[in-house]
Amino acid sequence: MTAHAITVRLAGQRDAQAIALMSRDLVESGLGWKYDAARVLKAIRDPDTLTPVACDGGRIAGFGIMEFGDERAHLVLLAVRPTHRRMGIGRRLVDWLVESSRTAGIASLHLELRAANEAARGFYRAMAFDETIVVPGYYRGREAALRMIRVLRAAGPVPYTWRPSTT
Image (tube, rainbow, N blue to C red; front, top):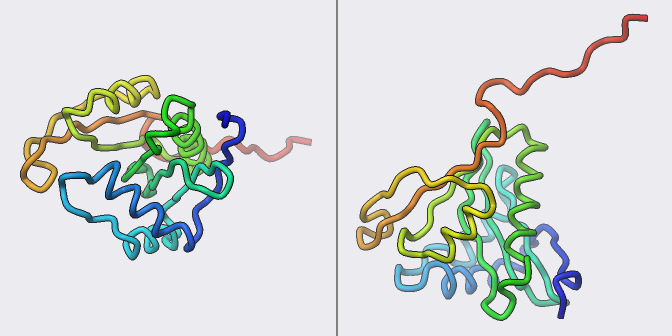
């Protein structure tokens, strides 16, 4: 399997259970299961949320869930199966979400990760995210979170670039 064999598409309702299980096992491990199939399905159906999946054949190899506001987007979850890591799948998912954010006129992307997760910190730094603050007890009062941001443009109204013809 090569990274080129991976396809990225929007998740459908049939993907909710697989995404939920990946979240439980790869993101929420040790914290309790918050993103069960019902909650993932709600995200998939939400018009202000994008849930791309990276697929290796018919199997989901990775996914992301990003919620969009007026100027800010929040990367809620991102995971890649251990068997598919270090193949550029996480990068492809983040790039897909960044381009979607730019298209939507988003000014900044925000996320939280376990402060002790050095691999994730390094990944997000490589994806041009900057560390902001550590929030003690963020995860169920037991574990600190590190907040990170990626600025896409200056905050404020999206510049209006169209001009009427002068002829």
